View 1 (cartoon, rainbow, N blue to C red):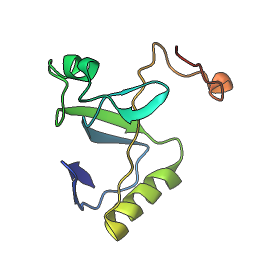
View 2 (spheres, helix red, strand yellow):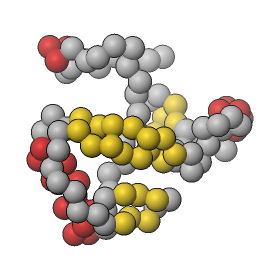
View 3 (cartoon, helix red, strand yellow):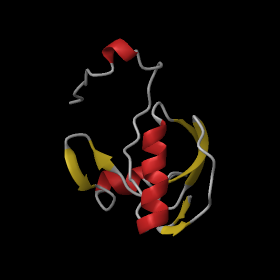
View 4 (cartoon, rainbow, N blue to C red):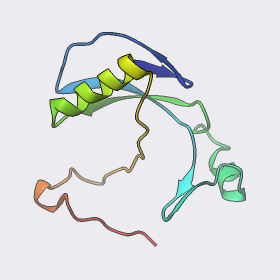
Length: 106
């Protein structure tokens, strides 16, 4: 399964714990505001560099639950649907004991 600028192409893949993925940048948002800031002064400033709509990044994702991977593949192949995620960079790996805590950024 691969997404290219909104078009979904089907590709059967075996179930794995880790999978190489392609992230396609779509939008800028601010914490606490679900709306796009892409056309705002800040959004224009942030998009003036190398990270703008359509920028592609290669990454690797780890599935802690194979059922999630299966659901994504089935949604794509069966319905042409794909999930959209928010990206949050971590300074260090998540501590599973504290994974249920969230930190609000002001």
